Image (cartoon, rainbow, N blue to C red; front, side, top):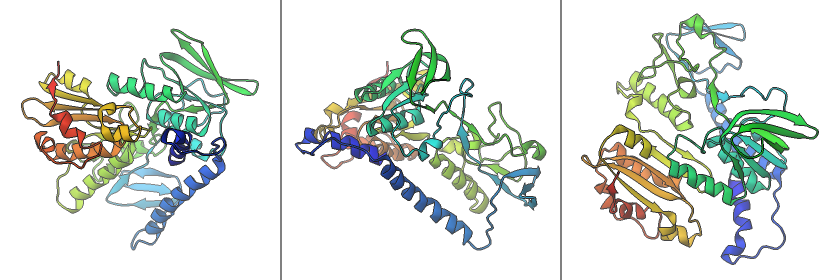
Length: 404
């Protein structure tokens, strides 16, 4: 993503009076080599730390339960009073793509060439991030979304603004695309679409499937341990991440309580606090927060406007476009907006969305006040640095209006 941002910035150089000779090109092998080096440093560091930690043994192999507190791996049985499951998730492959080559978020990371025309099936976080990335590298990109709008869990104004951002970069977006399937056609791959309007197929060179993820729980022998799953295959856990079997916990993507690195790490913090520190932390104590790492990014915390309306509570709302934020104007990064929702009676912040330059960082200034359960006036009255994007949050809070 950093390489894609660099290419995008280089192409815009003349907007800032900077002249670069010749066309901007991207060496995908060097891009991948840089990514591999960054990833390897992180992975190797973690692995070396594990292997050199006193009283910790690392086993490499496919593990599955033999009983409630027994796990088999490489023909060996390991038994313990406490077992922690953190097996993650993988990309979902929908029916209809069995006979065509496709990429997922994992295999996409091994690509060291530039696809001529990348068709992204799925208009949510992973699909949008990869779609914009490869468009900036130089690929033609089409995004095919089953629903009526992108990232449907977000408010409509957020979805529409993101669609505009991507279309401004030349990405073709197809919405309301039902019954999607794939097939080969000579030297191309084709995504077949049963849609309400427009062509019924999109032809390209490569397909990226980004239609969701499924937990890695189907081959763990959980039935032998008596560990319950829900209807989607996630391990059932309580508010402190205990499974249906005493002495067994489930953390990370496989428990359905979050789908991010930060929620997985927070799961660990909750379990460790309860077991080691006599600190009764719970999943329900945390405030949902995440980012969509397109450019400009989306930072989200708490409830959406739709959720606040559905709750029926009296609320206030503030909204400010990035075109009215001096720092964004100075950097020529005026796409997006900021939005915040406040409980009218308690004055506590209910949720916020910041789609714009620095949005994934700025959201934390709001999130921390939400955790403190402090009134929004704490931020409104705070003195922020000028010129920044964050300094306009107090201004936005000073312009709150009733949510009608």
